[in-house]
Image (tube, rainbow, N blue to C red; front, side, top):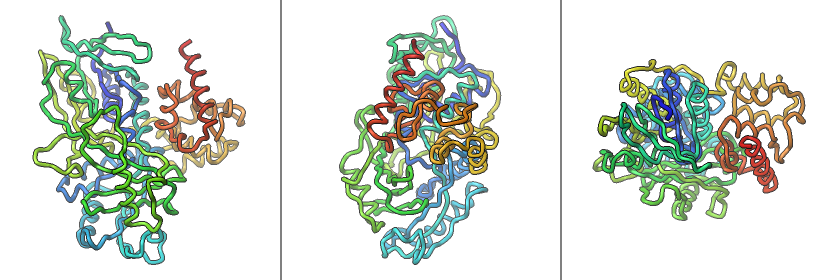
Length: 504
């Protein structure tokens, strides 16, 4: 039976981030995920790295400060995945007064040590690009900057960094039992490989429970009733509609129920609209949008934009459940805290470090704090290191995306512009790994249609743990929005062929 320092359960952004942090501290680490990396909540976010402007209204200054500081860290670590976006906040006369919004933006500008992003400013919309899509009732507003992120690829990059620093990464592998080791410190974890059906056991000194909405289910593997914190499941749903307006600016739309809805340019041809925030009590493996949420988001858009949308316009939807640490007395799901809690549970001498809550923006900071706790519990391991470290793809010249892209275009000038840009954004400097030595399009292997080539599918399977068409089409890329049925069929056939070679 293999013996390791740490087993991290959960392959979302927190689990991948913690595995990365711990592996970089010199600890032996295994990460197991019952489905795909970012297979649940971490691929269903609004895809923002932001301080959370609206949390100022709830007095969450510490959370906002921490998130704004992390925004700068992630911009440096993964500029191919994290990029600045201008947000337009139209002033709604019936909601918050202009002076209050101006004050909030002033605090937002100065709270987190902003270095690279522009400061906020007031806007008069008449004759401007920002005002053009809006109804005429909206004459004034504000502009401020935050960041957009490819959430699922951020998770994969973190897992890849963990792997390259020595961690084992097991997808489609569920921890189904935790037992105290009969003779030694730590736990014996039983892992079920859902692909092969095999069960194996591993001896670990510490379990890190980063299972997100399933955090208390994992605790129950060790002992029923072991959990001492309640998790509030809050469902967030999003719709993807044909492009609502021209330009790369996003919009933040205040709602009468005090929620915020974003409209964000998405995948060139679309606009992402979200999110809803409602308490969820259903099956965590069957989280889907309902018609009430679709209508809510359509109405949110229609209250501000000249271009009106209806449910029939929706091209795609996605939903996820945020596992929030429940606060006594907070009844509004939108007001539930996004702050995280790290807690050490002990059962018969065995320790489990559990993660409650959190948000994608602060995952690195959460991972670092979890790493500090793990080192203290184990009595070995190095100090934190991720604050100044690049994620895979963000190394070297890629630290400045525009400069990196120009260099890449010169280096591989035979690549079509659209394909080169997609490779650069998705993989950053790592696209050189599957392009190295290539001189012409034929080197990319079979053309599967719609600018998708054999070499990319092979990379996703052999390097990034992709095992199904959905892993490729909807998590490691959003090609599912763009490719034809014929191309999708070809991708599935190519995937089957590569997996057969890999396992055969």
